[in-house]
Amino acid sequence: MAFNLRKIDLNLLVIFEALYATGSTGRAAERLGMSQPAVSNALGRLRDLIGDQLFVRDTRGLKPTSKSNEIIRPVREALGVIGSQLITSDSIDLSTYQRQFRVIIADPFEPILMPPIVRAITTEAPGIEIECVQATARFAEDIRDGGIDLACFAFPIDSKDIVTQVLCPIELVILSRRDHPGIKKPLDIDTLRRLPQIAIGRELRGFTGVDKKLIAADTARRTPYMVGKIWSMAPMIERTDLIVNRRSNLTPYRLPILTPLSGSVWR
Image (tube, rainbow, N blue to C red; front, side):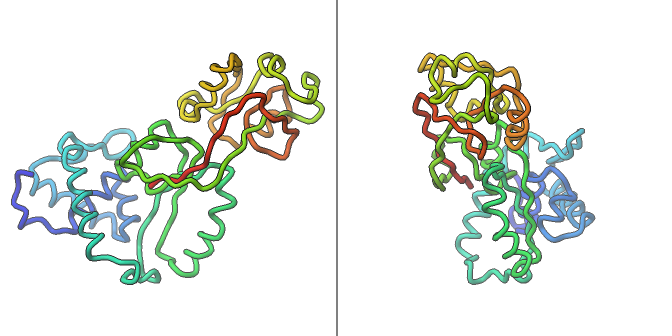
């Protein structure tokens, strides 16, 4: 960085990281427990010190410049080193701690995992906010960039710079509406090939590996309808003759091929 480090206030780097992660002065202010004018003022100071606009406005908010993209990694590494050395769990006063966390939680996990967490923060850490956002195909990049703090998802990922912890195994089954006219127990390969299926969008579906396994077993599926949210699948198959790979309390049929999948959390 071609500027005088002695003129840099550590708080300015914290604010820079929050702006980069959120793409908004308002959301950065909420995340840091500051006012929006204070964040804007800090951004102005950073621009003067670094000699770059750092962020420009577009239709989605603040877009980082090439300079911001260049320095974000060393800034985060520096903040991480300082935090690991100076901050411990014992030194954080949860009653006054202010932070907004952005997370991705797979639909089936959200009503299981989040209620006890929400109860805990509302009573013990009132300054903490959690924003659960919809996953996109670039969720791994969002984790690396700091735009997402944690993801609890059923999509495997192979990356050395993202910590992965398996939460539980997930058994995939074929689901249909009750008394589906095209299915007779047990489900066979020919029926699986023939019946139209509902699936999540192509970008996210590519992470699961399910389609690759089906193709390898000569059982490529036909998907006339694709959804953006998992929760909409059950009502759709209840009212149509579509089937789906999933877990549910509707009529399940074991897949005639092996497709192991695990739920994981990344941060």
